[in-house]
Image (cartoon, rainbow, N blue to C red; front, side, top):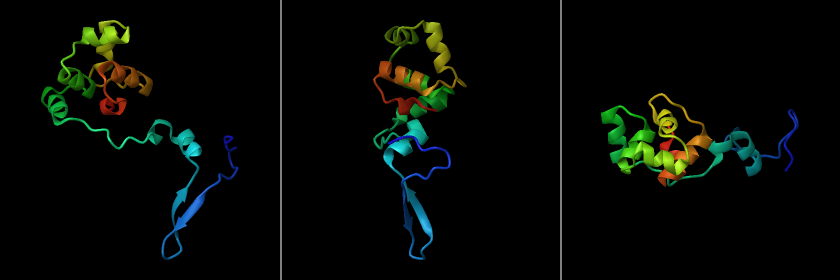
Length: 120
């Protein structure tokens, strides 16, 4: 499907309630993915173990660091898996860091977890 031009109608369906008022608008999946990107990924099975949350809360660290510690990995080992320096990796897991989704996906792949599990 071609990208809709601003102001051009999108193929959709309106679902109405018993009173006839619109409740939902259904749009084509490709339009939804285009508009909402990563939020469009369906991942109902993404969970975070209680042990990871406990590390994050008790140590006041980022979720990325909590996962790394939970998995028994070192910064150096994870950085090596990613092909970057330990210092570069340390910046990614620091409290307050806000890695991009592409970076989160690389970190998650190196950890063997779903990238959405390490998303703050």
